[in-house]
Length: 181
Image (cartoon, rainbow, N blue to C red):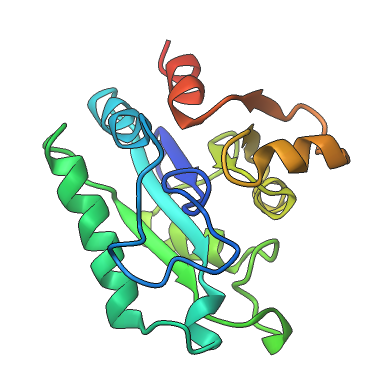
């Protein structure tokens, strides 16, 4: 596996606004201000960008995989207005929390898929999320955990128990500014 600069992002609460009622269609998928530009900055700085997201709304019957792909097409289309670069890979867990799968964060299945499909060693790469699960999964590949205070991030920070050396930023844009200095 080659050494590449890579950042893995959680989706809901990091790239787009989150909802306890689930994001159920492309109209409800609304980017957090500055997040699309932040991804473009990563791409323009030579980073590979992957997204690893739990999407139990599929397993719960709230929306289909086709609808999920429509949300991701919206993400790609918005990103295209800022850069020629694309998100390199989006992986998702469609299972409900009680399904016992190996891909639902904080289990390592999604990161395993990224490492295999992009042929990268994720050690020392960045994992940016808004939940403890995102930070915990980072440790399964010896990644650098980054918490953003958007989405559920502020609550995650207040609860404590963050992995040692977790970096904390207001949002994805602030994190990316620091990572691309």
